Amino acid sequence: MARAHPKTLVLARRGKSGLEDKRVMSRILFAVHGTGHGHAVRALTIARHFRQHDFWFISHGTGAAILGREFPVVELASLVTVVHQQRVRPVATLRSNVKAAVGWRRLVGRYIKVVEQIRPDAVLADYELFLPLACRRLGLPCLNIDHQHVITACRHPSVPRSQRLSYLTTYLIIRCLYSFASQYLVTSFFRPPVKKGLMNLKLASPLLRAGVLARQPRPGEHVVAYQGYSTFQRFFPFLSSIPRPVYVYGFNLDKQEGNLIFKPTSEDGFLDDLASCAYVVCGGSHSLISEALYYGKPVFAFPIKDAFEQFINAFYLEHLGYGSYCLDFKPSPGLVAAFESKLPDFRRCLEEQSFNGNPEIFAALESFIASGSL
Image (tube, rainbow, N blue to C red; front, top):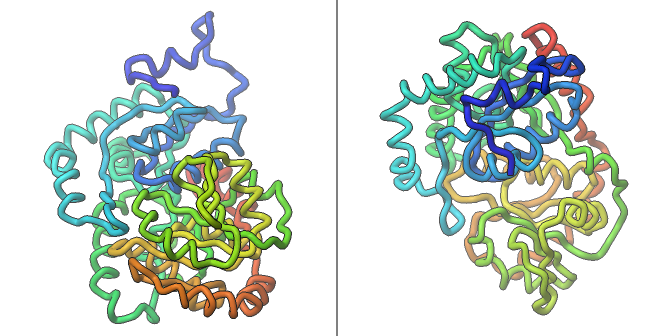
């Protein structure tokens, strides 16, 4: 895993002569939220597409581990989200973030030092607090790329009353902690109306990995089940009730238990199975849902409790006729028959849609890298 200490950042990209490689068009500094896989996968997709540019990342936790396999990463503390037993734990999350909150000025100073040492031509962030704050201090434009800002940037009049408190809490967190960038590029498979007056924001369709676009969807009989949190094993009895082979990802196992076929971690293997499955069972991850919808695969979502961003993804999934969702920790096996009876309707709805936002997103990014503006 690649790592770089801030003091060696500039030298690490210089040749023996001490001169920088002139083949690199721009140097990009990209801070990425480190909880879960989705943020890091989105950032990797961007960096892999713009190979002509020189990418440096700031991240932590899972994000640093994923990004560090291909790109230099500076590990700096940032805010985290604690998930246990299929729900966000507010008290544990607050406790884990106390140190960062108390020392936020010192942390911003460390981010400023990284900016000054890397001397980026463009700065990007994915749901990250401290780099946009550092850019404000330095007077640099910063583009935030994520899905979460669809919650604050758009109107959601159909959200159920039972989720209003969670909606308000998440709205305030995003507004107060993650809204310091100068511009915003928001990706989403659903397109609610954007609030008036947001001139520094662009809403686009989902960003898809190159590996997703390289495969053609085809019909199949198996189901793909994925969840990035180990608590998903609580759903094994439910998955066992599905009258099909279920390819289970997320545990890095290679074994079979009845109809459950556990698969080792493999991007190629996962995408092959995703492109050829009958449907998908997963949490509320926007990235995975978007990839499944691009292939025309209906989704049965089990969003993490108290994670409103996952709930709203699952809600729009059902609201638009692309699949269903369930909030129960122990879903009834009868849900399988009800879901499968609707598969033809789900597929008809998906045939009418396009979920590839890559051309639009990459054009916007190229514009920002070149001019500091969308």
